[in-house]
Picture 1 (cartoon, rainbow over the protein chains, first blue to last red):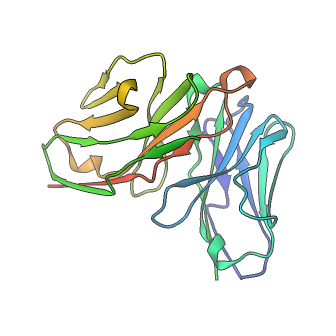
Picture 2: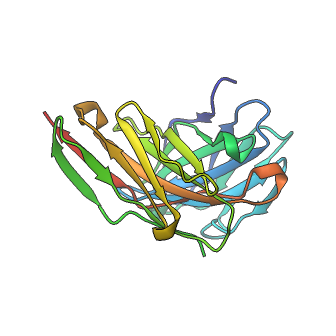
Length: 113
Length: 119
């Protein structure tokens, strides 16, 4: 696609429920990143994919968080048993090569009530 | 370890003033990339500039200019003749060279500087 697409744009969920956030990167971009931005905070790295593999998962905050990428394209970030502290904007970015920079999606705003 | 520090949490200026946003970084790599992103109230992250560690030339793009100084590990951003539309949070970020043909594993962001330009 023309840009990085994320869905849903907004998600309200009850504490304890599981949620899935989707990222559709720019076609052909081999690298995909997930970040989290809590209210008034900077961006926190979560996970990086190169193709379908994830060489860096160091930012995932707990084992309730997982992500996968299939076909070298779409990625899904799953949060199990959501907690109120999971409320944040989850941003996805993709890149072909670093010298061309990263393109970010518009994010999914997750609210856990 | 990688680290990006944006010491200015908030800056408020009056339209037409010049303003400089500071960014100091830490890295052990000799090859790295520095970025500035703008996040307006709408929330999307807008790419402004990327600079690699071997290019210390300053860059100017319209009212925007960037001063990269390896000696002080700084990559400062200046907006000349600020406008209300410049109001946003500005993030500085660092990425180290890695494998995979140049794409590395992550951007490390500073905490951002909120710029408010008053009319």
